[in-house]
Length: 356
Image (cartoon, rainbow, N blue to C red; front, top):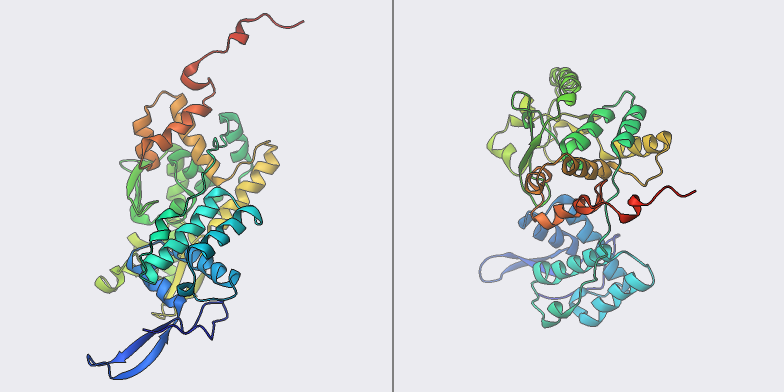
């Protein structure tokens, strides 16, 4: 295997970074260049990293290569990695979490893509993250927010599931028909954060609008099927094991997109789920229209779900499971934002008389 760094893709990756030999066991045959970006993609999918993680890692590796004048990563080491991370912290002033993501991408590059176990990789110090308290809406503010959510898109229902079930934004957007159990009032989250499944509750107030949404989705699916479409993307390699499953009703999205697309690999006419930015824009506008003086987002509804359950007296372990937190310490942060203060402590100042 050789290093060639004299040519680059439009994205800044060395095209001849790695050479793969096509031929027999004796080494006869022609060498073809394997682009670094292709190796990144292969290594990410071999390890079942999410597409978002794959995209983020590729972006950081590209920036690293461009920052150092398109030098090949094999020709660089601890000094260049540290200098790049310092540049992000001092000149770009990125958050600690962003800096750590860049470091993770570079560790992935050297260890998993290039197969280089270097001693200096373990000596690079990660940035210390600042622990911020989550933004939480009061129950009155949640009501004001939902009063402003209306329109032709199912954004109000999606927001209701974020608040009523504690779903993350993408977990809600990626719900499939088979993930909703009306009889048991349960929502199943498939391959959530950390690639873990979990079950959470289905709020009673969401049952009627959710049935209406599914009726709309079913009518759309029926129309798509009659027009030679009706396919959706399936996880992992299920499409190979069950070739027709992608057209079956249980696998359809609860919140389908308004437009169809053609998959380049299969040629199928598919529908994606509703893009998460639709709900993000709707919630942002609703917060503004309601006059809520907080920097509230879609994730704020999930934070409010956990905090309000704590206020209602539910135990921390139950809430941990509903949220899908791996460590209860992550859930414990909500004890710091209760209306009555931590442990329900009352301030001694409240015993004073009213100031004149």
